[in-house]
Length: 202
Length: 202
DNA sequence: TGTACATCAGTGAACGCGCGTTCACTGATGTAC
DNA sequence: TGTACATCAGTGAACGCGCGTTCACTGATGTAC
Image (tube, rainbow over all chains, first blue to last red; front, side, top):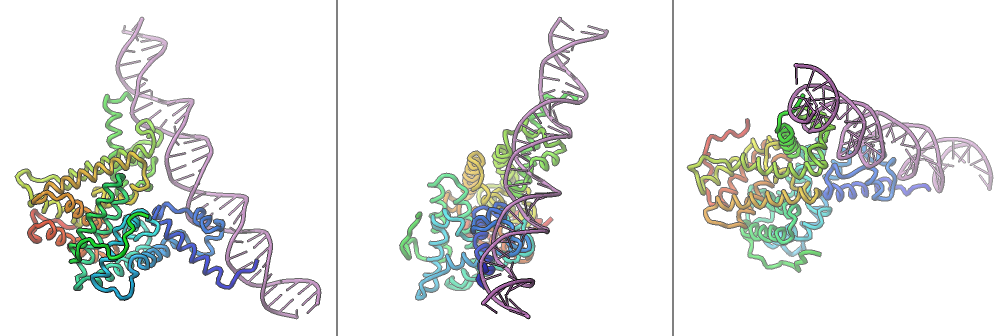
């Protein structure tokens, strides 16, 4: 078959998305080139028409992860703002759904430790993502406080990561609930009243 | 040569220690059986006289990591207690030295995301370690508050992990400093006055 | 209109390598007689 | 006292396997003449 004019670009996009999802769930070492290509219905040989190396793909995927994470956690009904937006973010971030679906989760909860061992490009993408995320949280605070914003995201990311690692479900739920309380208190938000229908676990 | 009566037990101990150090720095997938054996001056073939499998070793090493971490961060001059002990712990935990030496660091800063993908034994060892650590922090609080203790360790572990991932040294230092402030405030400790000589980076 | 050729995303066999694991063996020393 | 054998932590060759990467090829369609 002859290919549609933007077929190659489209395949590349699908690859980066698939890689981002797998990396969140399995880490950079957990994705294999052949597996990945099979995942989007192709064979492994074509990979190097799209990326210089697996490292190159990883760097692209790190950027993608932050983009998707932003779309998932920061998207809000337009009329909301300030504290209301932050409350929504916190509820979503510290939810059972976020814990149970690492493949769609925030990169800070899954690949932070791995980034240390990645190449320069992946690290740069990670740096940019962290800075942007911290900035957006700062903007949702009652008054700008970059150190507080950084501190809040550290705790939230740490809590979600730990809630996944802990085997006991009740203990895991408890970590998330306690962290929601702590974050709300620290950010000066009202106590737990769901700002929108809370579906904890799907 | 004939072997000393406790030689085998000693070799096993050395292996578990070496594995713990490597796992912290490289993750469970980052250590290879042959490399590890070479690291303590032996050849790979002898490994299976000590462990049923690599997974078995990993589970042992997880326990070891928590034991060492406790010795490193919780050891205090005996006269100290309460808030004073906690201040010491926080200073050590959120230090440049902890960031720069992951091979001697707290497992919560390095293997949390990996534990999700490990076997039952490793997860059980991790669970026990987390519970014990949280309990010790709780005991250092002015008054017991298990949820606060968990919240504090989440933020501290998240911050150290992130301080390692960030490329820019100044930004990394800033994460640690800001988190020390945040934790001290949250735990009701006095402001930054070094409770003992602070050697930040070696 | 028909023929020859160019294009190019994707194919699949093959590569060298390191992994976890197995197993027959080594060799120094203790024990039995 | 000397000889034969048991012990056992560690050795090193070998295994099957999956990895990242390379490369000659496919085959449907567009273009040139």
